[in-house]
Structures are given as C-alpha cells and as structure tokens.
Image (cartoon, rainbow, N blue to C red; front, side, top):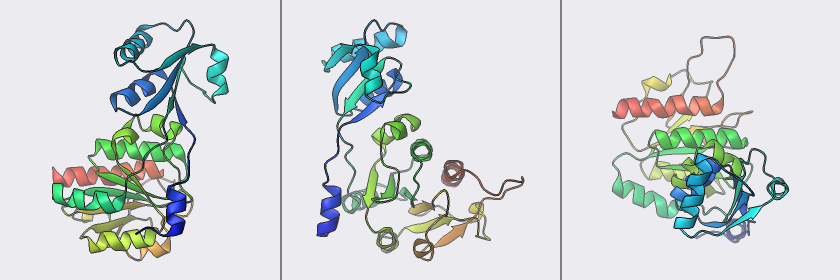
Length: 256
C-alpha cells in the first residue's frame, strides 16, 4: 500500500506536455501515445510533412493550422512546423510490473537511475536501454529528470515504449529488488572490479548515479556488485549516458 505522501505525489495533476518536430510527433503516433491536438504551421510542406498530414487524417486525429508565433508561444525551439499536445505521461507501478517481468522473462534487465537530473542524459540512457532490450527504468520521484518533451525527443521515442517507474524510496526499492532475486550492479569509479568481470546471466539491475555525486551511499551499500569502466585518457569519467550504454551492451554481449 502506498503511504498518504506517496499517493499525493503520484496523483498530483500534471499539465499537458508538448512534443516538438515532425519525426517526434510521428514517433508518438506510431507508439499510440495519447495525443490531444497537433498544431501545424500554416503552409507547411515537404515529404515528411505530407506523410505526417496523411497519418493525421487517416487516424482522424485532432489538428489545427496555426501561425508560427503560436508554435513559439508553446515553448517550441526546433519545432519544424509541428507541435503536439500530449496527455501527461503514465508511469508504471513497479509492484505490478515486477511480477510480470519475472514471470515472462528468465533474466529481466532493469536500469535504476539515482538522481540523474539532466533530461538529455535521461533521454539518451532510455534510448540505449530500449535498443539493448532493457525491460524497465526506475527513477526517483524527487530530484530526477522526468519524462518530458526534451527527454522523449532525445530518446528517439524510446520513452513511449520502455516502462518507466517512479519510486519514493530508492533504498527500499533496491532492497525489494534483491529480495525478488535480482543482482544489483552499481557503476562507480571507486570499484576495483571491471564491468566485464561480472556475470549478467541473472535477473539484473544496473544502477547509474547522479552526474555530480554518483550513486548515493545508502543505495551503494546494498549493491551485489560494484563495477568500474577502465579509462585510458586524461578525463576522469565518462558521461553517465555513455557509461550506461557500455554496461548495457556488456549485458547484451554476455547474453548473446
């Protein structure tokens, strides 16, 4: 059962979000994202625009032709003449998703992101996770990037298809994952063990930490394995999205 505080946070109302650009809107339509209205710049033309308009009309989606100033007023930057208003993102309930994953897959792969606040890093990680066949992403309710227009665009639509769960207490979440039989692999530059030295042929959670401070010590101490990526240059660390991709594809390599 969720606490009163958790319920209030999870049930807080969100305003409609916006996605910008022809390809992003097409990806949303293909992913069957709930779209309220599509705003199209007056006089928009081109092959991709024609494809979009054909799709909109075939599916009888609501749209409006508007002056470019309207698109700018919606906060659009690189809008390419198209902005779509979408319903607030529906996050998944981990308590419901976890048993389903364990029943359907021998070795589920989950990514847990601890206080990653940059939306583009979040989106890039989601893109890599989806490409690598990950089953879900877990993020904290507080102090973390959320599913937003920028994150969706950076993810190339991956955030439409990859389940994202928001949790209030990440330490408790990690403990529950351990109880459910998951190996928890934490990426930290402090580790002596390399990421290639771990066996990922188990239900696995990969933990990536904050861009500034890494993984919270309260979470790190519950990790089954701590792993590092070897660095040969002068820079002391990889971007978190790049590091996540390295670990994800080691899982892919081992699992074949």
